[in-house]
Amino acid sequence: MKRRITFGVVISMLALLAGCGDSGNASETPGQGSTQQGETAPEVSDEAVSGEEAAGGESEAGAEPAADGEASTVYFTSDISPEGMVAVYEALGWEPAGKTAVKLSTGEPPASNYLKPELIKDLVEMVDGTIVECNTAYGGSRSETAMHYQVAEDHGFTDIADFQILDEDGSMRLSVEGGSQLAENLVGAAFGDYDSYLVLSHFKGHAMAGFGGAIKNISIGLGSQEGKCLIHTGGESSSSPWGGDQTAFTESMAEAGKSVSDYLGKGERIVFVSVLNNISIDCDCDGNPAEPDIHDIGILASCDPVAIDQASIDLAFAAEGSESLQNRVNDRNGLHTLEHAQEIGLGSRTYELVDIND
Image 1 (spheres, one colour):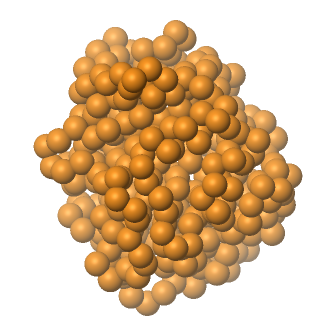
Image 2 (spheres, helix red, strand yellow; image 1 turned 180 degrees about the horizontal axis):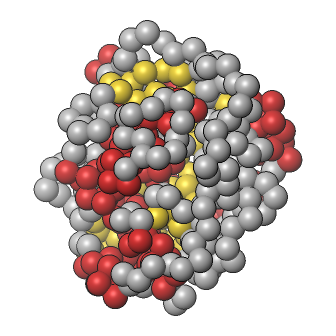
């Protein structure tokens, strides 16, 4: 029997009041303060594409984002295993249509806490997915296509599935509807080659965004190098990610995420699975992150990226050892991403948590 618990945003609001101090020794994203040299600007398709214009089939019934004003469903299992991954995904009642992409972070070498191939392999094979990523905009080992393919191989992802870097041939424009920061979002040029997306996220802190989860994975994560720069700078620059306003950055992540959801049938052809383990205050884009203060919590699944991120925040903030994460999120005003995402219609912060173990 599934146990249902309805949450709002009470836990995270209490944590916000309790954890407003600075994180003190917060590290920065690798390469901050420098720009990449000697790169050729990738090509960008000429016209922005909206969700209504996007080609592709319809997903199976059973998985739709919540309507306005309703609570979204977030499924939970404490079983962090390949079997747990499959079980929580199956609870969604969703099946991909057409060609399926599995979006994840390949992880910055040498010691980031990316999702390990042995954990996700069964689920990736189940959906017959191609693992996809985009190059980084801050230097490191994944800023150039050849190096990034090597990292994917070194980290074992090419052993379990086909792998593609979506922006190796430039960018694709998506229109942004209802945004206050972005007029368009630049994703990898091959983004539109896939009909359905399964988004696998490792929930953790982030030196700039406060935290990284589903919304970051489909905004910064699916952004081409130019698109990442636009998001970081609130639409001001497509050549450098540095120097942007923090509020504009958090709102741009929400707006970029909405453009992706809109393109994929208003969220009908994209679902989200987030793993809450090895939670450091630093992102998997940091090759030498701080030691995790929070360990195994569980796995979440939802059709709503806002709800799954809110549930991740609530569960992580309630865990033992969460003070450093709370400080990181609050110091970076990370919850504003969720506030703005709900405001523009990407999803709902109100959710019903369903424990599939009961």
